[in-house]
Image (tube, rainbow, N blue to C red; front, side, top):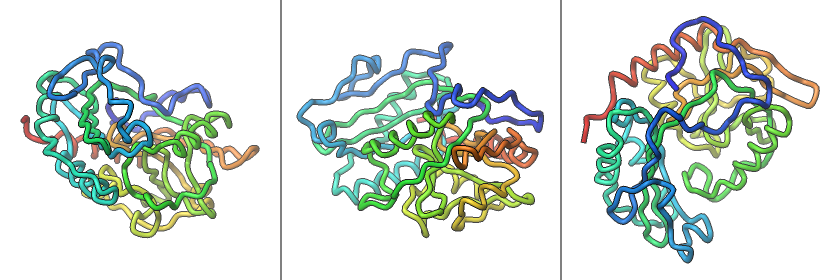
Length: 291
């Protein structure tokens, strides 16, 4: 979904009736996979059952935006994948040919490309089209967030998925994870608060969260404070939006701070709309060269 580019309010889905998961674009092509040097429909790709990447989730991955058949921030995503692999003591092959072959098969479409490398050495790539609703509702989910693999982008997402299910059960679309009153991140993205025109995101140098490539690129476009944020900062925010590779700026129309504590927000608010427009221009101007 292209980020909103005007300040006109977007219709908000009913709480809990949106989706925090990307939706397949029915007008796009069938999702494709790269497996053992072949391009095939993603539904036909597999990983060996005895691979610890499948058995134990011992796999690193990355996901990056595709616009018109070109990736965005490929170097940054591959560098983060190298860092994740180093923590898990995994060896990575050269993944650029995988990306190039997927993009060639995909054509000049929008979408997302994902790369996976397992403990057993399986290399897999996926590419497909996806869309998001105009805005989402978040529910605060309190849970311990520091582990030995904090900040590593692995496929061990059981805790992330649990948090997202708790949010949906509460009537929201996705979770805003909080630990000891400190705001961390979403199960699959980062959060940004707007107050008095100032943008602030949780700082990965101070918290056990993923160092978001998208947030770092947003910081090249607008002034952005990286800091510690608390629940009260969410309550006091004028606007909230979330970020990830596949949803560069997605407005939040409500935050459920507790069972009887729902905060409604403009979606998009005026600052979020301007940021979305500026970031969309930045992405268009900084797409990676075609392979």
